Image 1 (tube, rainbow, N blue to C red):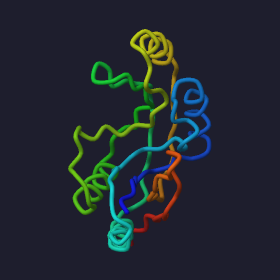
Image 2 (image 1 turned 30 degrees about the horizontal axis):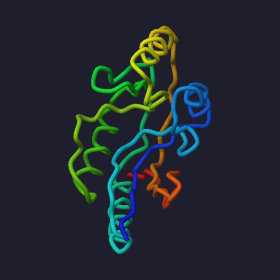
Image 3 (image 1 turned 90 degrees about the vertical axis):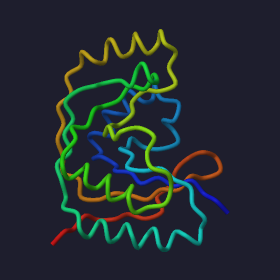
Length: 171
């Protein structure tokens, strides 16, 4: 059976609370998954997951914990009406994304990697314009250390659950 999987970074509770303060109003996926930064989404057969897990353990073992920094709210418009907390790209984050996408099943990403945490989506053009217009004025200053990432799977009801967690621990 084919299942949808995702490889994500969950930020700290403090950042999740901030993101959720917007998501509960502007993101219809609010109840399905906590705020996250997606590294890869893919589909796989259950039999393939042992190899995926081993590969992710190897990637985590050769990756140092790194700084996650957010300084502003941004948008993917005109491509789509998604509003997000923009994560400053770092060499470590870009390298982790690259390793995951080069070594895990599935297609190469459709778009260039823009690290972000979605706080609003599926908004009409007018809603997007109003919400983004006010949110981009908000000052966002957040920094934290990322020391793990997670493999998730999607349940039949559309919600996501943690399959396995990988701690970053380059020696």
